[in-house]
Length: 466
Image 1 (cartoon, rainbow, N blue to C red):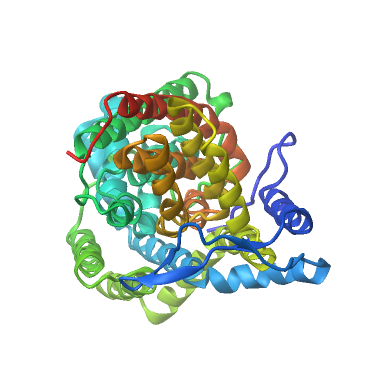
Image 2: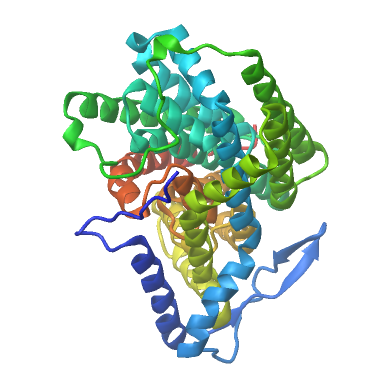
């Protein structure tokens, strides 16, 4: 397998240029925006902002050396996500080398029939959406290449694979009615019944996934009719393509055993996530264990397995690098102490607006803050202790305030360059960030408008905790 090039459009800067430009911008803003901080306290083991405690502190503007120090600081901060990208890439490389993924996808497409490929795109979009809703975000990184193999087998491209998998997981996770990091944290902070209001949130999530499925099908039909319009032209597909006609595929005993190793490993991972609170490091460890076990049952020698590991690392290394560079933006803001100032300033503006407009502005402000605090739970702990009392003062129900937060955080995750998980998933599909922007931005605006209509409806009905 060859390491993919981070292709870029002549009209949009290269992803590395974009991210480095944002780091430079944060360094400049540290000289303009006053430094400030909220007091924080540990509540139930988690650090939480104390409302009304914001105060300016001595400015800490970033010098040239500080700006460049933010880059290794970002890599250090993101090391867990960087390694889960590498470990998931290794696992997929070993599974691909065993032939299991190719034969499983080929058999799946043969059974359903290529004439049903539109239905397969729709089902796959909702499948990955369901993984985002119920499994989480970074937990699904290793499954993204399956969409790539399936998309190419159907006659699609790697951008369609990203629309199905990255789009599905991101929309499902961002608007999930049972998201423990955003809705769960929000309900805890607001002292409301956990995951209440699920009917409206579920309707919104299903509607957004339906729009995504329609968007994917529309793009699929477009590239079938006009292959030259593919947004993935020139991107290396080696390792994702089927090597023979679909009609020739069937699962051998070895393939079934490798599949069983993969399924059992993923089941153990999910059990650990939900019952033992495993996170990124434990997930990475499971991926490595699956890789070794799959290689063993596939009959790979130590040399073959080792060579496969190194080739797989080479394929995903550019994406892992992008994760570290994206995280450097957050580190630069923390060094300049401007994140809390931005959150405070935006929250203050909300109190001067009419009720309906304030709900939209609250969601919009969360969208902006999401670029500075990409972690859903981190953003909830930093902003909801401020937003909830403001919502109470201006007449918004707490359920509506949490929905405004969820929409602002969740939808913009589709194009947030500081979100390491997004960059990692795109890397697994070999899709450069600039191309992804051109593909997904039209859909982002449509989903945002629809979500804001839901938000206005929640204001109208004075949506409570039911």
